[in-house]
Length: 162
Image (tube, rainbow, N blue to C red; front, side, top):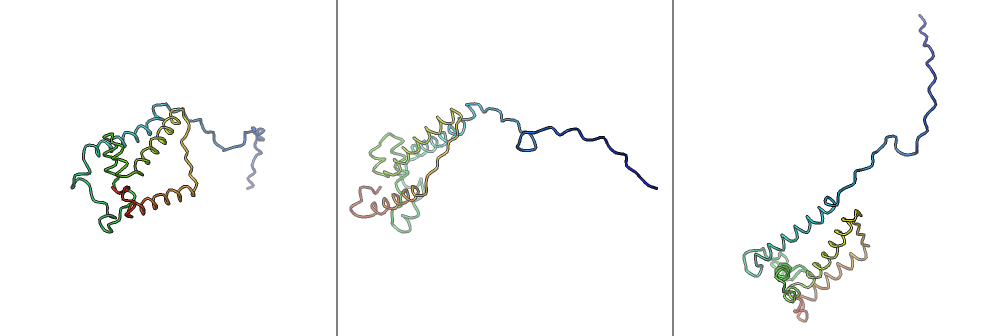
């Protein structure tokens, strides 16, 4: 038996489509300002909580915080040594004591504040926060940390020691 297939009706003319994906994608719903600000505000809340804890629990009293491992095992002050004492003094508004404990930490607080303000303003306007730093700058930051560490461990740099 010969099975023959009857010819099907011709396909209608193809509908022209715009170039792009084969499926359509709906535009994302706009994000509210409150939702855009949730992350920067949450980060600031965590920082305020950390500074509040350090302000309440004095790092100058022994037994509350662990000793810096580098200082404990080598006797060498790392770039972060004195950071908790600096944060404690900063939280109490004693900027000279904060600078005396760790000047780079105070500089870090200022950099964080500037970046946080920029982040918050950009988030409130619905613009993404993108910070691109060239590798040369990271090397520069590392060099500053290294020089700071070396100088604060030398006799003439004792003013930078906590």
